[in-house]
Length: 438
Image (cartoon, rainbow, N blue to C red; front, side):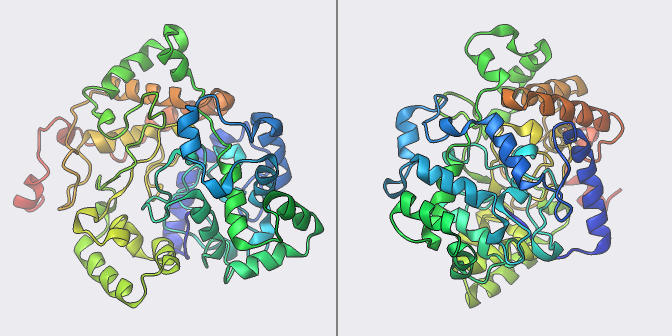
């Protein structure tokens, strides 16, 4: 979960408008929403989870992941067992872990919305908005680091942070979170069975991680195509696959192959998103001063979600100037149902994403050296987008199709990041600076 404090009213309005497109597309599969935060009610989410992934299948290693890789991703002290997965599932949907009893992990990682919330940024307790888009937890077991700035080294560690973040779930500390559930006889029995001891915060993290490791969704039309079923994806999507590996240069950071099924290099890149509205030098100076006061994990977590320093990305963790404005390469799996895109949720459609890359990102001193104009035509952009929608697991096929149609309709009338002159190199990024914007 990734969120933060109140924004100016006008900022909240445009963010809300941006999310309406996705909410409308998801309505075909989503039931009545929680009036507090917009998520599907927890009981209904659990029913939907059971239909997507039956409980008896959850503790088993996924057949879509090599057993050796699977084993390397599971810590020795948190081997997957049915009791641990069941405990983690119960915790995942429990709003009692939040200070005001309104937010659960599933609030921002909603089963009915691609295990994210399909909002630009998420909403925590007391209507507080964060500065980061909530990534999906699907396939998270394969990540080398967690959070968009990589500040957490494991699922066990990551799972504990939102609970004690003041603008997410808002508990003052882990002990308070445990106290909220420790009197529950069912929890007492479940912790004892799963870990051999009474409820405690470390095991809360372990159980949540165990449950998340079962959320493997890697059975998409593209996978059938990759296995030789040539009619599994359209001719347009097949053209997009060729462009993905060639002219569009997506493969540079999003390699897709059997040993890397997520389509991420697990690295961090400045692609210029923050550069549209931030002064990186000023932010970096402020960050150094703040971190000199307190650079604890909890302090970093708070700064990442509640201040403009969020826009510095990986720099907040490494303090390496080459990491200014750099964020982790997101996975491409299930990308069709996990909009909006980028670390701040500022791009509503995959056409927006392609327009951003096609023009060479946003120029700034820290722009990744691999970002440059692509000269993709409109039909080529359409083809790459068609391919990207083939990466959504078949279990979400209906929602994927609805969102594809909604994004396509939106892109037909609104392309805020499109700049054909830059994309085709008729103008160069530095010309506006030299000519004073003329």
